[in-house]
Amino acid sequence: MSKIIIPGDRTTKQPARGYCLNPECRETSDASRFEFDVTNGEVVCPKCGADEAPTVGLLVLIHLLVPDKNGPIKGMNGRYRLACDSKRAYLATGTNQEAATGDVRHANCPGCLAAVAGQVKKQIQKAKALS
Image (cartoon, rainbow, N blue to C red; front, side, top):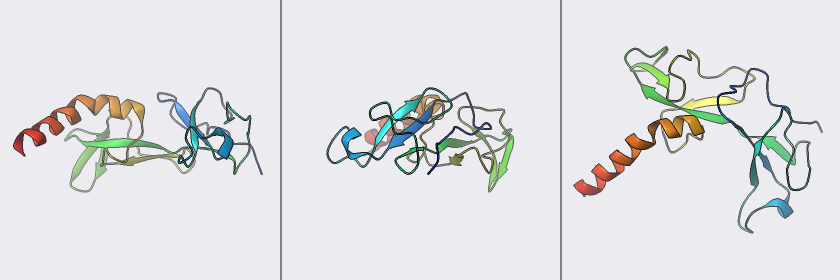
């Protein structure tokens, strides 16, 4: 077993989130895990103090890709940018535990979700008005 450390090449623009699988730390009995903000370089459960895998781990930060004809990321059907960082030209590295998706339902990056919150709200309201 080993301690979990935030990768040095992970973005510092967004908070890191960790999880603990200790049943005593879960918020509700039907929850599969307890999630928490990681406030330093090591992942340590603030409830039980666990600091080694497999009890604790670091959640993958999933960014939201948005179409942008001038975006720095080339992909299928055009160019894109990350919703939280329009200048970043890559999705992830082999070690930073970051990923990207075009589906807002799967994104968990707080910066990306905040950036598109107004747009999503408008789309939901429009869909409700049409139905």
